[in-house]
Every structure is written in C-alpha cells, then in structure tokens.
Image 1 (tube, one colour):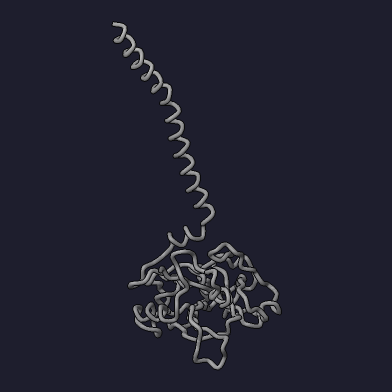
Image 2 (cartoon, rainbow, N blue to C red):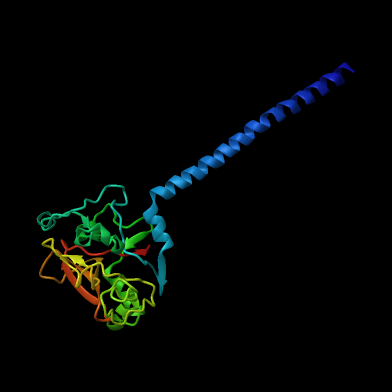
Length: 255
C-alpha cells in the first residue's frame, strides 16, 4: 500500500510539472514564430530592389528578363556606387558611377544610368540570381522577337507623352510592348558628362540605351562596349557600341 501511494505521488507530481511547463513551451513557440516573421520582414525591407525585380520580370522565349530598368545604388556585396553629377568628373572616371537622366531625381521612373565600369565591376551590379545581359543574350532576345528591324516596337512601352498615354515622345513608331519588355526612354549620358535624350520633359524623351556586358574587341578603341538602343521614331533595335564612360540604362537576365 505504501509502495502504491508512492508511485501515485510520483505520477501526480510528474503530471503537475508537465502542466506547469506547457505555458513556457507555448511562449517559446510563439516567440520563435514571431522572431522568424520579424527576420523575414526585415529581409524584405532591406531587399526592396530584389523583391520588386522578382515580382516584375517577364519570360520572353527561353529567357527571363527584368521588365524595368535597374536602379540600385549598391553593388551586390553592399559597397556603395557613387552618384556623380559633375560633368568634368564624370568625363574622367575609370570606376563605376551612376546618375539620373539630366541629374534630375524626377526621372527616377526611368531607372538609373550607369557607366560601363559599374556594369563590369567584380563586386556585381546585378542582384543575386541575375546578371547583366551579354551581347549574345540580347541577340537571342531580338531574334526571338523577329529580328532587329522590328523587335524594337515589341520591346517599347506603348503610348506617347503628348497623348498622356505613355512616356515616349510621339510618334513612338511601332510600339506595342507585345513582348512585355517595357522599354523606357531613359536617355543616356555621353562620355563628356552631357546628356542626350532626343526630347525633353515637355514632349517626352525619345531614346533608351542599354549596356551589354560585352566589350567591343573589334573597335579601334580599347574602351568601348556594345549596347542596344530603342528610339521614338522607328521600330528597330539599334546595335552599336559606345565608350565605357557613357551612362546607359541596364537590364538583367535571370541566371
């Protein structure tokens, strides 16, 4: 009888101890869940560029492209990319830099313009999971869209600034954005620091240029790289090269 009472006492004490631990376990679980959510939230707020890019991409043929121009201010490793407004300073750069079109933050809708040194920086201009498209990858894109002579219309955002239906200067020839690429007239900055946009803020801008990751090895200059261009008065894609101090828009393609 004494042994039986002793065993029952142990069982009762064990059950009471377990009941006392339940709130603590529950609290720990809630705390863990909250911490996980909070960390995920912090990661989201610190990675807005990456999240918006992942949400705003388009598959064209076998490729997945950003459908907006890159607009980051840091390399992939977190190092800052300097903004350079001064024309004389821009003209002498041999390292990465960015600027707004016409140095005007009101043009942020077009994304930032980067010199090619930023594109080629080993720290990585593109977010993780993406890379700056090479010349050959741009060719894959335009070939899929029917070739350089007509692909531009399929890549340009539609409408005109004049009609209040878009951002391009009229007539925005052939533009229907059927590819979903949504090419914008972000203009470009020349190697002397001046800007060119084939238009202005009253009629809309008329040209967009995008760097490729490919150096032009056939050029007489050792400091030029290939780009692609879209214009307001034609449906073609311009294939050309420019000096690496120029400032152009950037698009990335998924790894």
